[in-house]
Length: 319
Image (cartoon, rainbow, N blue to C red; front, side, top):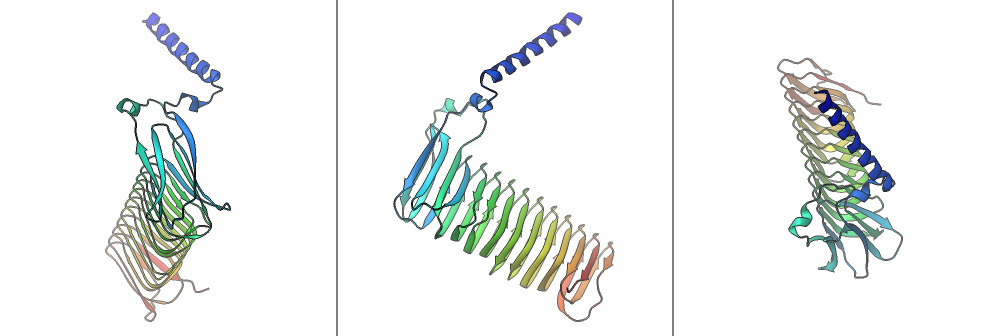
């Protein structure tokens, strides 16, 4: 038994030594062991276009501003898994073209990944459409679009560009982040990912839907806000809606900080509702088993809060 133990320890030691030696020979560059063969291709776009369509798969996508006159598309991609870059129907198309053999799909190690960088001059484009799977997506500020649509599965989305019309972002397990933006209307959907909006002005409706992810909205102005959550928490900080504010959660908590709207409706099951509003309200607050503490105003805009077992505690702070 002792000889077997010593033999096993010796084999482990030799294996670790072999790995360290191999890494040292590559100057500890882990990408040197990548089972995928990458190359970088750069495309200059001379044709005119009004919209951008990107159909990727695992590539991280970045859309950035440039001072150059020409649009450039830079792709870090596999040699047999390239992206085609074309202009047709007044749109710039960037699409994945898979020409791999069946055996080239088998990879045991992979470090890094494909990347797509689109550099656009600072003008307003008609539309930006991005469909992705596992790659992250980043849209830089100083860019403007009339419409925006982004869909991804597990990738994160960070959008800082302005959208004069409708902006729609959908993800499954990825997070969504928007900062310092102006939009016409906004529709954000996530399943397990978190949604964060910090500093946004929407002319129309803002709708946020999550399952288990958390929602954090701050410094947001809009006409109407609708938030629907299952188990995720909802936190609103300095959110002002000209018309209606509707919040619905199951087990997640709802917290308001200096928020206001002409009509406020909040519904939860076991989640607590706490926070502050900016003006007097006519409160109608009900909880089956939870505690209820709200100001007893008889005048003001309507504010209705209904919970099952959650607590309700709201106050008014006017300054």
